[in-house]
Image (cartoon, rainbow, N blue to C red):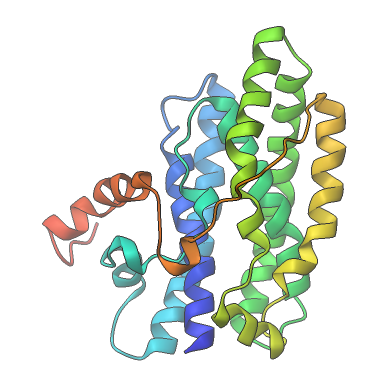
Length: 248
């Protein structure tokens, strides 16, 4: 049960953020980004699919990956709050992606040593994708932060808006702690040093300041989410709920 819940946490993180990024399709500020953002979304959703399929097998109740992704209610999702945050402007979207990918890249790298074959398989592909996401998002964060007066102001505002959600990345649920003790998943808190190093380096080039966070936000792992997740799920799950079992 612990492994099932820990796998669902990872799957939910990737599905929800993948859906958020996909919302930019057709709305990106330039053609290059209209191609790059959906591809990044597909990376995230592809990882989620493998994890949901694994979770369904671990559960053994006859549910499929689609059931896991599309037919659960809001309180059953265990994603961290950062990934469900609305896209906001382009600065917020790029910063959110930088924060998440900078956590997941060392996480998947450490997971390559997992005794679990499925986790190792996911990690082998995802670690390369996260390295690309870091490069892409970091370039934009630097370009906007060290850009015009307006772009710098928007980038700093994005930091103020999103930084309070980053602490939850390093918190392990009871399920994750159990898997960490067995060596199946990396210890989330151990990603902090590398995350701080990369974010500090990017912020230095972007001329951004780290804000004080008097009230860090958490609760996603316990199924306590913001209003935005309900709206996201209503849109994402509409077709599956309106036409159960529909296939392309």
